[in-house]
Every structure is written in C-alpha cells, then in structure tokens.
Image 1 (spheres, rainbow, N blue to C red):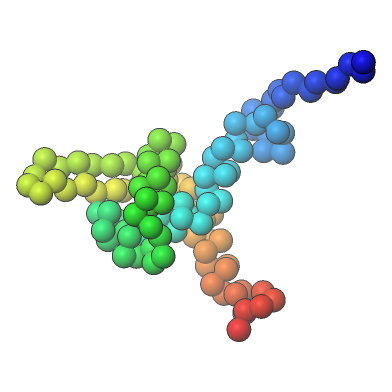
Image 2 (image 1 turned 135 degrees about the vertical axis):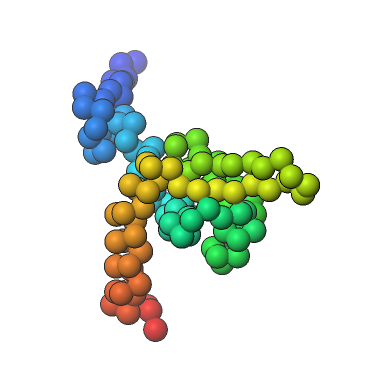
Length: 123
C-alpha cells in the first residue's frame, strides 16, 4: 500500500492572495462577486433601504440580495441601521472600509461600461 502525501495548507504570508490558505481570498471572493460590487456601488450614493437597492440592482432576487448584504455587513463593508418605527425601517450604508473598497470597484465598473463593446459576443 502506497503512503499518501498530504499537503497541509499554510499561509506563510497572510497577505499573499496567491497562497491557497491566505485569508485574503475570502475578501477577494466577496468583492469579485457581481452583486457585492454592484451593491457597494449603489450605496456610494448614500444610505439605501432594501427595496431601493433591489430596484437599483435589476435582476437580483430578494434572497440573493439579503445574502449579499449580510456578507458585506459581516465583513465590515456596510452598516445596517434598524429604526424602531412602524413599519420597521432598515437602511444600509457604507462603512469607511466599504468606501475604501468602492474606489477600485468603481474603476472596474467604469472600465467594463467603457469597454463592453470590445468583448466578443457583445452586440
């Protein structure tokens, strides 16, 4: 019977996104998600309620938007304010970290809009 080689994932440099075990990959995965990038961009205009975000992000389901907003909140990119009113009012806004993340994402969104005609299969 042949002994199996096991490779233990380790991250010698916790800031090396190319390392398989790097914790940076979770944040990269979150920010590279289209709904995350679009939600952060929509919140750049100021605090938004769920319904306004859903209307702005055409095509997102309520379930996916809820999951996206929770992940962004869990990672400190957005803040969720609950106002004890009847009916209950909830607003989402960018944190300082979210505003910082939005800078390169805004460049990416703009680049895609400007270059969409250059991609094969785009009419």
